[in-house]
Image (cartoon, helix red, strand yellow):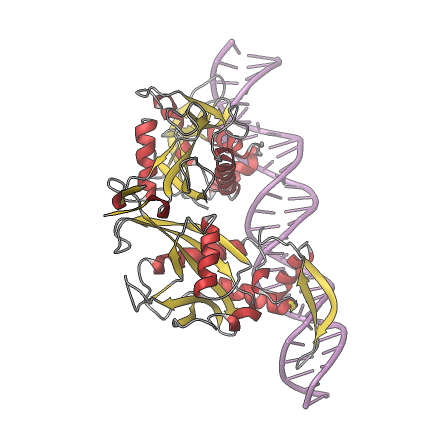
Length: 221
Length: 221
DNA sequence: AGAATAGTGTCTGTCAGACAGTATCGC
DNA sequence: GCGATACTGTCTGACAGACACTATTCT
């Protein structure tokens, strides 16, 4: 069966892949290898393939696997972007997701890939992004911030074991502001998703207790 | 230009159109006039038409105009539903929106339309809905409730002039629980979006002061 | 007067912010 | 001991819930 191309929009998925490193909250950007906008920086994205994807979320996971080389533990839909002029190929829809990458997997990103990629400042990306990806990034960041602001714990960004100070620094990186230690820890007392370990991280000063996320925890309020 | 149909998913928009009447929060359902699922009840929806729509939101407004016969003041995206099996026509994407219809425009709905439609209980629809529209309705309702729970005022559902008791009943209908009058009114004191009028609604007992929404108010927290 | 609805006042518990204070490490 | 980091205690103000109270109308 063949139909007119003009009757069907191009369907894409784009992903804002966030991580938190020493510099703060970062987002992955890749240099486009193909037209349109070849050579410019953009959020990783790709065309939906109905023959192999079973859902849009599945397509986003595949794109991350193919272009970035990692399995992502957490992916969430943000919203759609659509219209006749946002992509040179014609009427298009982008379904935007955001994903969270654990701190200990940052190094693995892009290992087997040839395309240039960069971890850019999520709030103020150094690169001018292609398409409407600057707006997409703002929306993804706002959605993520809103969730953490509403007291969801971004445990997907943490390694298996972490200290509460680690977790606080991660939240601060997302929100872009400092949190009060006492308030933060008081809130955590009521969390079902945190498990206390009998281990301590020994560093330069007083050892800090280690915690881990409950298996099957939800990134929710 | 012609391309294989299998490479392009069907792109649809569906809308949960809410109103509040004497019975509570209702959602519009229509009886499908065409295959697939002909004769079954569903949320109003339609196929994106890239030749006339300039965005998905625009497509949703057009569908409401065509199938329901009203201009909707407020439309908001909820999320997408996608996959190969949710529609008999093949791999499909539905972008779900919810819309709010002012109390005084309920009567106008479906006047010039032949298709059967019904205002169904939004929390417990009487009809068994086609496709995955039952899940879509649950998501739309959850999104709307979340917003009102977070103290957004559903002014889009109100007529031009209304009493605070009216507004409270509307919030209660959405949330499915009663609110405390004193708490509700205390909150409204700080609202920038409400304007006091020098008019009163005279009813069976003590007259109630009338209010109106600020022009250009946002349905936000 | 009494019922009904509109609108206000007040007590209380919870929780966030602020910040001081204590504990335990390395040096 | 001293600096640094981990962790706790406490005061306060904002606000939500509960509920009693006053105000104004109709019958």
